Image 1 (tube, rainbow, N blue to C red):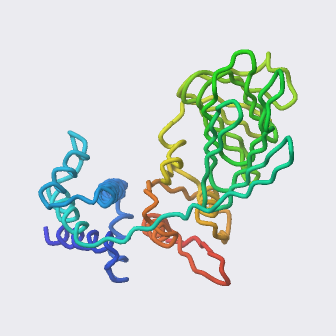
Image 2 (cartoon, rainbow, N blue to C red):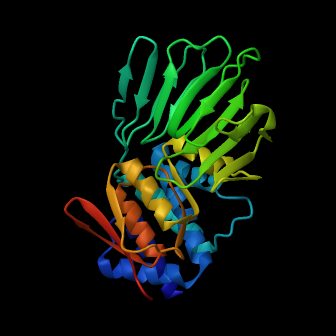
Length: 327
C-alpha cells in the first residue's frame, strides 16, 4: 500500500511539474511495468487536463466534474480515484498552460488564383468562392481559383485539410494532391497528403467521395462510405474503418497518437511546434500511444514520451536529437 501511495504522490508531482529527477525515474519504471499502468496514467492525465481547461470554482464541483468524465465501469482502483480527486483540487490552486501561437498565414495572390501557405505551428480556415470551407493544419498549402470554372470546382492540397464542401451537383468539387484526386458533390472529409509522408490518407465523415489516381477517369474511382478511410501508398489503395476522432483531433488543437511510429510522431511534432527533430536511427520497432490537449510544450510532450518509450532526447544547435535506449 505504501508503494501505491508513493506512486500517487509522484504522479501528482509529475502532472504539476514539481517532481524531481529521481521521482520521474521511479514513475518511468512503474509505467514500463505494464500496459495497464500506461493506460491508467493517460486516463488520469486526460482528466487532469480537462479539469484545467474548465477552471472550476470549487473543490466539490471539481470532483463532481471529474467523476462525470470517468466511464461508468471505470478501470480505476480506489487509490487512483483518490489520486484524481487530489489532482482536481491541486489544479484549482495552480497550473500553467501553453498554446500554439496562431501565426498569420502567408497568402500569395494574382488576379485569378490564390495560394494559402500555413506555417508550422499554425492553423487557419479558408472560405472559398462557393461557400466551401477548408480548415488547414500546420505546414499545409492550398491553391484555388478566385472564381471556379463552369464544370469543376478544383483545388490543390499539400499537407492536411478538413473540407466542408457546399453541395452543388452540377459542379463537382475536386481536391487534387500529388498522386490522388478526391471528387465530391457536397460532404465533409479530411485529406492528409504531406510531401514528407509516403502515403496519402482520405477520411470520410459525411456524404460520399470518389477516389482515383491523378489523371485517371473518375468513373473508375473507389467510393468511400462515412466512417471509412482510404490509404494510398506505393500505388495501392486500401480501404479501412476510420477512427474519426483520431483523424480530426488536430482541429481541436489536440494531438492524438495511436501506435504511431517514432518517425511519423517526429514529423507531426515538427509541424505542430515548428521545431527540427532528428532521429538517431530508424526506430522501426518503436511506437507511441497517447493523447495531448495542446496544453503542453514540446518539452513536456517529449518528457511523457520518454517516460513511456525507451528513448532519450537532447537539444543541440536548435535541433532536437532523439535516441533509442537499449533496455
